[in-house]
Length: 554
Image 1 (tube, rainbow, N blue to C red):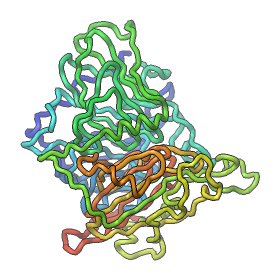
Image 2 (cartoon, rainbow, N blue to C red):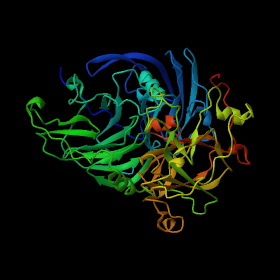
Image 3 (tube, rainbow, N blue to C red):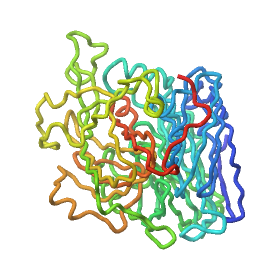
Image 4 (cartoon, one colour):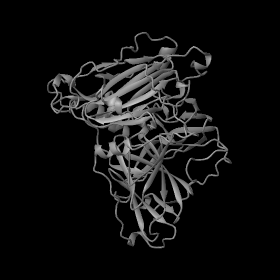
């Protein structure tokens, strides 16, 4: 069987395209064969990856979600700010109870200033491993991209695959107290690539025409890994990330963490008689073929592109710190310069002590259980009701507290190689931070070397924020703010706190509601690296949240 070939996925005549404003999502189990084995996975409309949503900037959509599976489900619209509409944001037991088997929920998707590639995914347990897809947000009719119109647009969705059921992998992971089972393959557009068994026939293959430019809409739907992506002998020019435009940045590779998206221009300017690998480490591959090439791929020598080493934090930091907002007249930015609320939060891996001889449930270091925290609080998701409705209707007293600390409860050398063991033990709680409407917020996220230092891609729901500062080591509140970029910092909704380093973000709390912030590495979220912001209503009616007529019952 020949490789699956994709040519000219989408050619758009901007300003003359009318998109649907209603979508129907049916969540169901579908049999899929990968790595020589067939298994049932959760899908939307039987597709893996799921269907793409197309919309113009400023549109409002209704997605009719019907759950025909045997599992509870929720859907999150990642990168959609949802102004005054946290009710459709999707994180389970934060803004809604799950859509139960046989039930449905009509979700309103309110687009505002997003433009570019964002995405949607399940947001309960680990269902997002297979329940995910892209959202392509185009300029308003009559306007255009701030870069030359591409010949075609190509989705590049990176993911992971387990031979076993993801439900079984999750249950084994939670029960063990240790690390989860490593995935059996990484994928590009749902295909593992020809390095994996029984995969050569399905390897994603992109045909391009010499001299043309292509817009790659790249998203990392992987569960646990920051990935490096490149195409052999070709440059990538980044023009957008997380639904916001950037100044053009040309690189040999991109670093993309779970939850992030990039819009990249690819110029087909190499020898058309060769084949070229596109690849992501850790490893998956696909093929770029020029239409003018009549050679047989199986008889052609082909090399992989250069990619940084696995867990190469400096390469990730150097790439991410090079991004700049477009900050043009047509695409202005608004960075809070006078900050009212300053917050600092550690993001840490932690350990929990275990009863002696409990080896089955205590497979962390030295017979412990692994955990994670923000400001030493490991977040407990409510088990039967959601924070948004409890807050709005003033129900379920005591379900959450409002004592999330503004600063780390313990001040220490966060990135030291030898830290006291007592610092590794977190507290547990459902603690939130309450913000007044329209408050200008600065949040410094400080990585620590507790247990082990790691990169943490942190995602904030309901907002885009400006990444005004980066650094390795400990944040210095006197020195580091002097080097903030307050001119054209990148606008993101997901940013990597580097291993044993820090980032500083700013945003204006002008979107009332209940919005969670968490690490987008799924095992870290499961361990408790999460918190919640409650942004209060403003004084005007248009600054209030109003509930829909129907929410999924708890």
